[in-house]
Structure formats: structure tokens, C-alpha cells
Figure 1: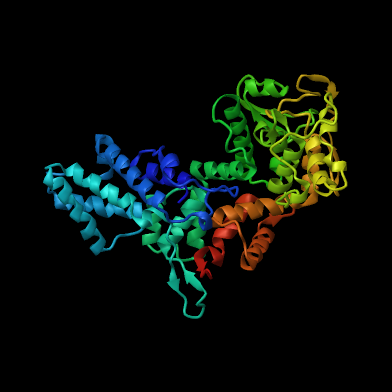
Figure 2: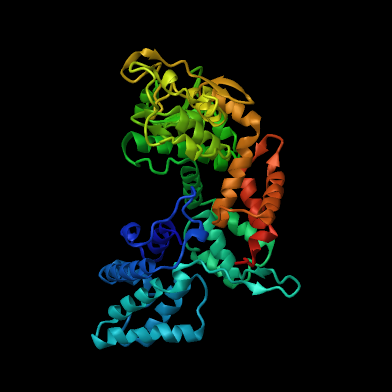
Length: 488
């Protein structure tokens, strides 16, 4: 599990948010997602961190009568109440390991009751069991072993509990709820209809909305934005738009780019220079030149550098994140220091003169792909506020003119959004990134790409790709129910 998945799972399991997990567990590498299992390795740091966290969590639980009593489905008669302890182990273990326990496993965990008997305190035994479960490999790892398929030795068919976990972590980022475990026990996840029905139930929950929002935040790089103050309002603005398009209206994903309305607080509307609503509400962009995601502070916050917006960094973000294109690093012989601002050709030079690499023969091939897009967004600062001059430089006028090389020229977010949709690059990218997020792996092979091509075709209508349809097609696929044997 990633750190975020660990925290969500523990919170759902015992009602405690282990905030220290970020400090005690190995840091997740962002690719831009935090769940790439090929980069997550067993280590001493993981073992020690999990042990420390398990102890702290267990103490927090048994020290709180409401929390501990919520986990034990009976009232213990004393420290040696074996019937009650076994009932706790059976129920808690099923949720912690995300599957039914065997009788042998129940016996082994029930033996931990002796820790409570020794000190004549039932809850000490419960604490010992919690510590053991929270360090169990099947708690810390999402185990997908599957069963052999005689005629297809390269494949394994996932069992019902493995499918339940795959569904839940994909769509909620946490452990399966009891109803989903019950569906697994009852054999309801053995066929396509059962899986699709379960996915529909998950997608109808607030947890799924939060999960899809987090996918976008990680993908587009604004997950680091604060949840407080104006930054928090910007994140809420973007979340509202995503939820409206994906869940409420089930529109093609490109509507996130072309939306003529945005959800604003009075403070954020005033900050943007848009009509101020009496209370948080949807506001029309009118003729402001704004449209959709590319106008929002959350998106525009990404790509700042050296105390201001960077045309290069913004253009790079659009190309690599929104379009999934690869922009190579400068060749070593050019000795470019990307951590230093562009050199001043003149002490009083404006940004248009400082960012000149798109006209340099040795650099233009890459920089015209980035800088010219970035300049088309320069009339919007890193908080999304409109401006016509550079900060503290009234002599440096910002025209907002940009060039999406090979597609067309534009001025501002609305026109860039139109060109982005016209290019066809965005839908291919969002489907690719969501697939990577779903499978927890960045590198794809030919099997993945063939599946992805089919999923996009099956979930695209006349108006474009709908994210909800893409999710439904993926969970209904044979690939979702199977695991391919990985060649080391």
C-alpha cells in the first residue's frame, strides 16, 4: 500500500488516522502517482515503521472505550473470555486481511488472548492482536496471487476477495467495506455483472468522488496545494468541476476543459475578477477569456519558478502532463542549469526577452513546444488572477499570445482549451493516466496498450471519452479479473 492507502485503510479499520505514517514509512515515489508497486520494495525501514505504527495505533484504540468497543462484537466477561476474543479475531481479521480467515488462522490469532490473561485485562489481548494484524504481510500488501488456469499458464484468475480489494482500492483508495466482502464470500464477484454492479455502488459514494479528485490532483500536479485559505478554495473549485462533469452530468472528460462555468466563493470570484456570487455558487465566465480547468488557480499554480510563473515550466506541464508527450532534457554538452533563472540579456529585460530559447537554433526544437504554450497563459498569475503586466514591471506588458505548434495560435485558457480538444491529445492522455493509476504501474507493455485502445473505443461516444464509462468498461474486462505472470 502507498502511505495514503495505509492511512485510509487504518482509519477505516480502527477509526484512528496514523498521521505519523508519512514520517515512519518509506516515501512513495511520484510518477506522478504514489501507488506504483514496481517502485515499492520491502525494506528494514518498512518493517520498523510498520511495527512502531502498529504499537501506537493499538494503544490509541484500546485506550479509547468507544473505539475498542466498536471493534469487538460482544461484551467480554473477563480477561479469559475466549468465545468473545475469537469472535473479535474472526470479524476484525476478515476486515484487516480483506478475506475470510481459516480456522487455523483464527486459532493462532486467538492465542494472543494470553497477553490479556497475564495482566487480567481483556483489552490488552485485543491490543496484541491489533498489533499483529497491522504488521501482517496481507495487511501491508495488496496480495493478488490468483489461481492457475490450466490452458493459460501465463495467467492467474483472481479470487473473489482479490477482486474486491482491487475494486475498492481503485475506486476508493481503501479497504473493501463489509458489503463488498460479503459479496466476495457469497460468490457475487465471479462474473462481469457482479463486478460491474459492485463498481457502480462504489462509484455512487463520496469516497469515489474524492478518489477521482485525487487522481486529477496527482496527475496534474496540484496535490501539493494547501487545503486552507484561498488555495483550499481553488482546490474545491476544481473538485466541483470534476465531480459535475464526471459524476453528475456524465459528460465527456473534455468538458472539464471547455466548461463555461466554474464554482466560486465570493472571495475567489473577486480574486479572479469575475462576477461575485452572494454565496458559493456556479458563475459564468462570460467574455473573460476563461474556460474550464485551464482557467483555475489549482491548475495555474503548477509551473511557477523563480518567484513568478515560468512559460517554460507551464508549457512543459501542459505537454507532459495534459498531453502525455515526452520533452527530452537538454543535452549535457549545453550545460544548462535548470535550477537557475534564464540569463538576462539586458538588466531591464522583460520576460519575453529573458525566455528566448525558443528562437535559439540549438534549443528551439524543444523550447518552442513549451515556451510558446506557456506565454499564452502569462496573463494569469500562479493564483489564477488576471494581469496585463509583469509583477512590479509596468513597462513589461503581457499580451497573452501563445502558439500550440502544429495546431494553432491562441490567447488565454479558453482558446488553448479549444485547441487541446481539437488536437485529440487530451483524451488519449487522461485514459492512459487513469489506467496507470488503476493498475498501479507506470510502464505499460503491448498487452496493456491493446487493452487501453479497446477501452477508449468502447467508452467514447460521438462527443468524446466519458470517464465513468471508461471505468465501467475496465472493471468489466477480462483483464480486471486476471493477473499476468510477470517475467523477472
